Image (cartoon, rainbow, N blue to C red):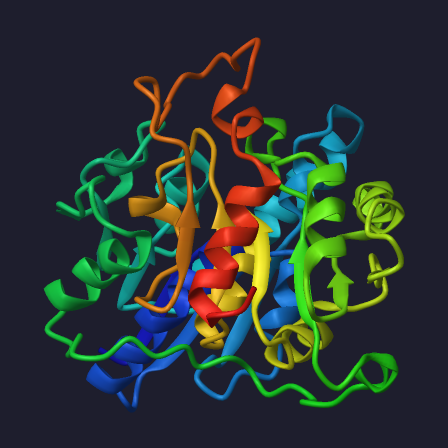
Length: 332
């Protein structure tokens, strides 16, 4: 196989989960040209990657807006023509959505791989459908495809693209610190910001709070309740600078969110607060991490319609999270 296309546009955590897949694929096919379809904004974490020949950057979020219809049609047509001319031998759809299935079809690859359990009719576009299982971690699921291709899966390694290990933002941080990530993609996955703040006030190390610029108010609320023990760098880093900030942390406290997977990949101990989501599928991968989740009869929850009361999050106290951290590091 000479030319391989990976289709994984988003989200941040999913792209991090795909890095062990990329590593195994490159081991199995060291001379192959590997290209990647990725969403605009998230593409920066893959820029300059020595294992990736070309990034096909798509503006998928803009494609959803009717006002951009004319531009979207043009961009999709350019993508169709470009992928079709690239002469891929294999395309691999790790997303399993209708959009990614269509992109797989655009590639005109002789072999188009994807998961049998994928949603939105995407398996219709595959030539080979692999049983990935929905009861294992996403990383292990992705590796099912690379194993099908005959590649070794004896190690879990995260080959990040090169990044500055000590960018300017890191020079203003304490020598030792904890990183908190209080935001999350869904309201149901968010532990209260004031609880993060109260937790920060009780920790023996200073806390650095991260989030996107759009969620800076959440970070500010954490700082407000931290009794002076937290600072916010919300919106002040790009993704590669964020890697450096997380890499310098003693440990990482978070909701179920993309930076959690960055921390796990960097081997920084994670304390992950989970509500309705299933940590078996999407929790921090590795044995050094701690998942904090209330055992309720309704969790994990796969309801499409959100609950009126997120008691899976509401019932988790600050003292429970603090105790878990103290036990891990044998401090009081």
